Length: 218
Image 1 (cartoon, rainbow, N blue to C red):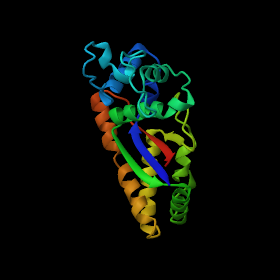
Image 2: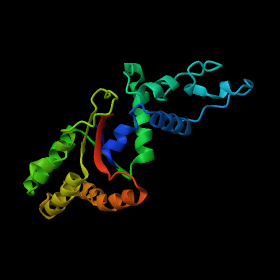
Image 3: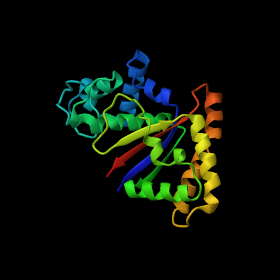
Image 4: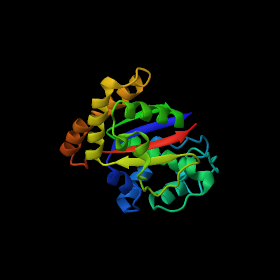
């Protein structure tokens, strides 16, 4: 089993977070510090001792954890540099932090290959065009410069395709097999939020959201 997660976020806005510009690097470092505040190390006293995992050579040699990014991880991800295999979990934690801070909404679903294939089969049997199947969401990689974890997949749809997908799923729901209906209805209801999120993005002067998807095995 694993998790399929859907995110309403502009694909270009997501890519720009790792573009290596001064603004992008500064934002990513600030976001990392806010997400993983440095531990207070009693008795050390100096400001440097409080930088925790985000200092390159922190006083007091803080413990480097595989799931928490270091300062080097932040810089590597922000500039699109290669991240060592043993630091990719931390790198993806940074991506998750960007998503949590930027996406208009997200939906996480427990799923595996069989779940996806069974749902797509049920939807196709109810008349859904194959181009709108759940697995087709992974046809176009996001292109962010962080190598995927083992077994992971990603993809995206532009907003207009996401809204067309929502309409197609809505039309298929009445003829859907009862066993597939709860999951399909949950996804369809979430997809229906795109017009609202797009309006909010326009008011905020931000790019309209696209549909970004990850799959991660447990």
